[in-house]
Image (cartoon, rainbow, N blue to C red; front, side):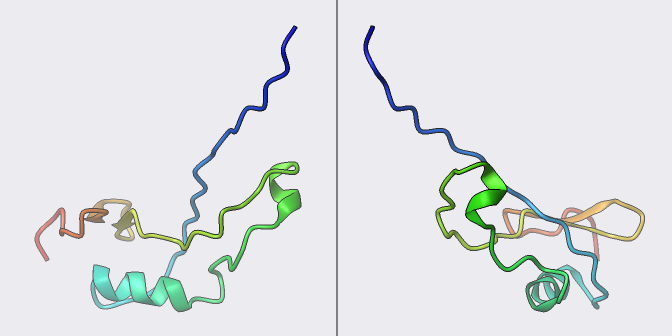
Length: 79
């Protein structure tokens, strides 16, 4: 039987609740929030490697849970 090495990847996400005037300001506030995770450690993934990528915003939701900004950078509901 042959030996193989398999590379497995995983997307990691986080959610940070902040107060802001609009969705774009909320993204800025999230990046500067003390609740924002800084890095992921080696042990967090059972020995996997973390590629060091930066956090990228995917969506912003208002207090009711409605999405008001999407990852393509556009408002999804009128401001």
